Length: 438
Image 1 (cartoon, rainbow, N blue to C red):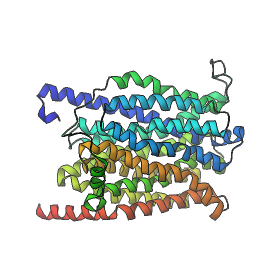
Image 2 (cartoon, rainbow, N blue to C red):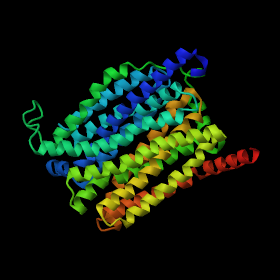
Image 3 (tube, one colour):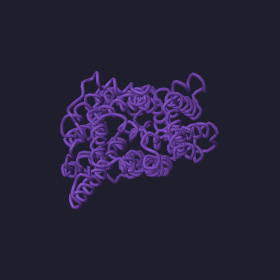
Image 4 (cartoon, rainbow, N blue to C red):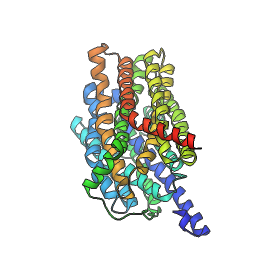
């Protein structure tokens, strides 16, 4: 885009692009915080509302995932047609209000409905934001820009666990007892209300984002044309969509239950558990997001865009190492380290896969493609990951959470490699031909 502009205009366009990336990264941070903070207060919710671990897993997973999946594709199609910034503004308003409602829920079903609202709002963000970012940058910078955007997910996960732990400790100490409306609530309820507020503060900043011109867009593609693009080249784009869902099973199996494992099995407080998991995922995630995006851009500049997919082999290899390490972890610190290794591979694969998908389809269906990958991730990852852990623990490991988490993650990583291998193999052949030609 910038190449078609005068120098001053190109500089302003680049500045607007980085502003958009920054604000959208913050929106993603808020999104993941509101989505995942429930994992820190599993036992208090279960005790007050009289829920089972299975019901809790539905609130963590299916209550969010079903509507996230159902709303994903319509949201993507909408973002491919209308102003993407406005779609994001509507989404963040909805999920922030629904997060506050989680803190006011009186039973399982009211909590479940509130989680549905969170899923409905969050379904609008990533498809619209990813499409918008792609149109703000040239191919030389897309990986880096999307990598920085994805830092919101990394820091959002850490924020949910660390800041959530801090807020819980303050709440238990009575810091918020004199605050109107929330002073009489239980600490876990105060937590949901407090983390739901920042989304509303972001709205004025989001409204300053200027909608970029869509590159080479001829209008919304018919669904038949979308399907043909997805299955072209031996289903290369569809495979990346599917692999994100398969790996998501392991992602959510680990992140949903690791804080509980550290508290139940290793005697940590919510603050200690949240801080350790936050440190683990933030360290691995920052390296993965920045280095993964930049490395994929370097591959694209050096050998061409089809070479990006080769990097997924290393990414998913790291997730196998992380899952195996979770089996062997003998302490809470070792379990957090294993999760950090997993996060390094998973998040770098997420960033690189995001760019591969965007570059593999026309502009007219980019948001739809991202929405499809999120729908698959929701159905497989968020929907199955949290729920599989207690089921596997009960059936195979006499209730042992750690072995169940590691088993689910290991199978997910192996499945991911199996799905994406044809695309990686094609990328390796392309890379070998390019190196020979050079």
